Amino acid sequence: MDIQTLVAELRQEIGKIESAIEALLGLGQTKPRRGRPPKSAQATAVSATAKRGPRKMSAAARAKIAAAQRARWAKQKGQAAPKTATAAKKKPTGRKPMSPAMKKKLSAMMKARWAARKKQ
Image 1 (cartoon, rainbow, N blue to C red):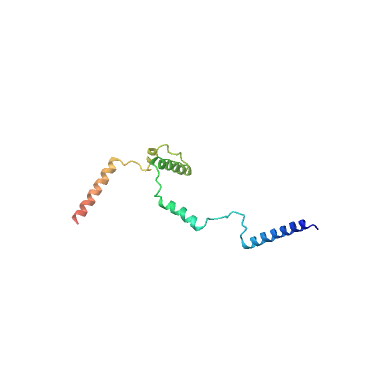
Image 2: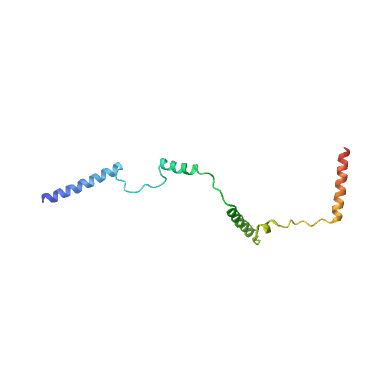
């Protein structure tokens, strides 16, 4: 064997041994770190967001969100979505209007009840 080839083989062996030692000691990490960043980096990110005040939403944005939610509710109930905010407020109560005779009768009943309480 030639001395130069012997020296080249020995250098290759030395390289393999050194890489094995680095792998055992954890020095030869070539992969990037995965997962959550270390606490020091995380603390700086949290402190930057903690200094900022509460976020504020514009009235127009709130109105858009409310209209979308009303449309979702209407879809879930099987009704047509209201087109405007005033249309959503005018819902039928399901009551019949009271007749004038009934109003008069209730008024007399309440006056009698108040008079009885006043006597006591």
